[in-house]
Image (cartoon, rainbow, N blue to C red; front, top):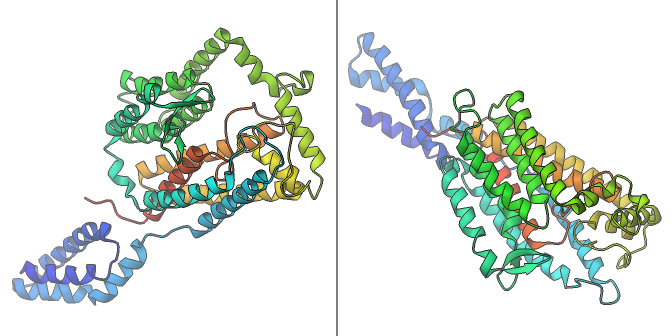
Length: 427
């Protein structure tokens, strides 16, 4: 009797290309057909007749299968992909311009060749993360957390140091696992919070440890941007998982206390942090980079100073101050165009977030959106003195292999979450 139902379900699933939803669809249709069979049997039909009538009432399996295929087919947001590709194109042009600068300026390398290699690797990483079924990571938080630590610890005696940061030297690239780790730790925390009850568990010791251990590591490293990104991401996850404002407020107070203690122990960090507040009060000291950035933007004009220009007085134009260099070289219009591109990307990422309903995916998508918003906004505002100077590169544009690959991986994960927004959760 049930063999005919199985054959019908096989015919329906043959037209559904996304295999991830087959089990859920079969269970849904089987339940409905068995209910119809029971109804027909109550009306006096034999078991075989009831099954045949139930199958007939379901309709043509090809029509049903194609309808399910349209609904559950993974859908890629190609507008987002195009916007990111445009930003990457801006980055390639900028790297080519930086390579044309005259003289042996500090850290000069063949940045265009490095970026082209990074694009090739990054596209593959992004594609892999987009194809990855993120739902399989939902129960792997502890494993991800431990694996990340196992990747971090060896670099302190096996890695090479660049600007005070230990990293892996893989020959063709130097990979900064510490800069990449906040996203891995946040993925682990998101997995944990899907099984967390704020009403019952609250801020218990395990959750505090999951925040404190990475945070202490980041406070010990030269650049504090990883601490900022991890803290913002952690608070975002807590909000999206149902923590109330009182708990979040208490957590922010604890973090603020830790930061104040750190600044009290190292006053020079406070001076650097406040350098953006009144940069022209010390234009040759703590406000030097901000002052030079503002002056370069003012001097750019509508047409800029041209391809290959050397922004002599501003260090680190290839990474943290790449937005300043773009405006200085190509004019105010290029800066406005960059801001429009970033704003359009914000809109698309926020739209992707709103369409995700599955809790774990929504937590990840929300955190990724917030982190990208912070990265883009901080970097641009930093160049005009509205945010403190920090080691926060402009995503998809600035030089730096690790950040570029990590941002593409995170984008791929978000695209994968969005592609699966209409898929049913497997029973």
